[in-house]
Length: 156
Image 1 (cartoon, rainbow, N blue to C red):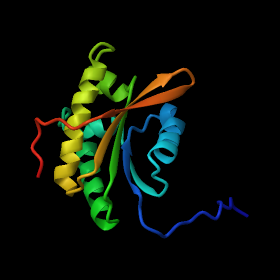
Image 2 (image 1 turned 135 degrees about the vertical axis):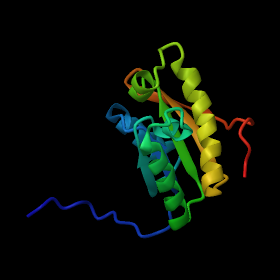
Image 3 (image 1 turned 180 degrees about the vertical axis):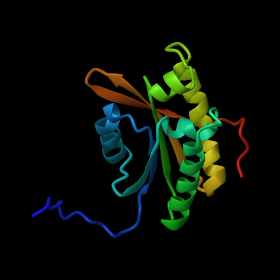
Image 4 (image 1 turned 90 degrees about the vertical axis):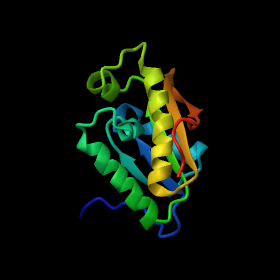
């Protein structure tokens, strides 16, 4: 007999969509934050290296970014999503390796990209409630700080 999952299947309405980095070091923190702080219990997730930062097209050679935005748009429309949470995290290898960030430039790049990603998602999906967060490790846990949208990017 195979593994039998807990009987928690839920065919109700979605609480939102969450986009975060694929870095497994933050999996438990992301899950805890999404469920216990944001109250998003039933959600779609788009998990991609760089998280929402990948949506900003800094690295135009990354086809995953285009696919991720297509997936986000599809899920928001198909599941009538009215809330999207975008989560970045410190020490992100996507930024440090692929985008050439340094420890000194990482936070500034991530905040700028997160603000841009909020607007990119709003324009692509029509969802107004798009929230941005930046996770930092503090002790054995994490601290999540809200990051607002930038006024530089026009809304639809």
